[in-house]
Length: 199
Length: 255
Image (cartoon, rainbow over all chains, first blue to last red; front, side, top):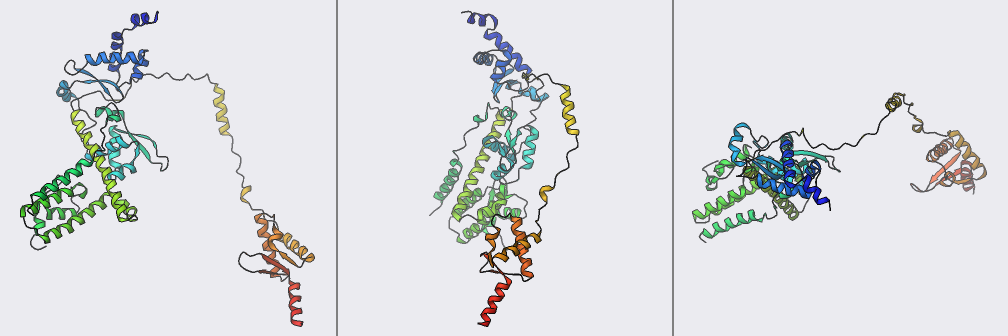
């Protein structure tokens, strides 16, 4: 009987939301609900409802700070409106000058990871040592143990990767199994040309 | 080369290259343009379009084009899978084709994934966020350490400071029993029996003992005290007293 009374009295959702705001300002990386619950000493369900409240308050068009669910956690970022101003003072350093090879390597590790350099080289058909080293340096890939049989280092994408590409987890990467489209398109174009040709 | 052929004049407009087919070929052969970046399907389409525009079917041009494009395709395939020629070479042609198609599909998937990521980056370009190390990461409660005895550290160090015992090499020495002992043994056996079977006599001996017993036998053979015979390699070795052998010969002769 006294339990609901205590909750209302000591920590209504609004007050919890203010605590979460504070935690997110201090954090330099997205915080998962589990961590927020631990820091606030509260139930994960209540954290979720407080986050909902914050999401309404900190959204594009209403605030310069936007709450986002990214890289397995919750974080504040600057609103898109403020991008130009932000760009005058800061740059998003990680992604500058990413090559096509880098994107393909990230995709392979993102979809198949953790995988080794030989795994990536096998798919891309060329040596990937330099590309992988660059991505490690940018913090988009990290080492994740060794292959049991070959002993080669295995790589995985980092939370920063998810942050930079704005996804909450790797499961948000699109499905790529409808690949027939490309080949079908080439065939279609060939057929079109063939039709134009006088017999 | 003589006058440029109709195929050579074919104008191409690709992502990686723009110009006549002839130039593409020479750039590729001089390794100034990586074939991996050239979309050969586009070249084929350009040629077919070119044919369609010209109307009539130029068999010579078609033949020349087929030869050139297949050579380029082979070069490109080799460039894409340099270290796997041998592996693919062992496969049946259909299997190799299937394997190649599977790998190309796999690579195409990676390429599409890469393209999606590149697009995604453009979408999130306007989103600025704080990046950096996390000096203020949430504090994890550390498991409290039980109180420790400093003396234990000293003990640990002391154990390390003790000179290690000299390594034993006992296991490295083969103990050979003296050959003479086995010589005597064979002699005493042959005193009571005139014929022996080697395997029977050494049954239950160790490897080394069997070897030494054999050496002793060779020694006796050298001194013409025994005769050894073996019907075939690995067949049982038969031993007999030399005088028995001689006397039987003698009796055979005298008969």
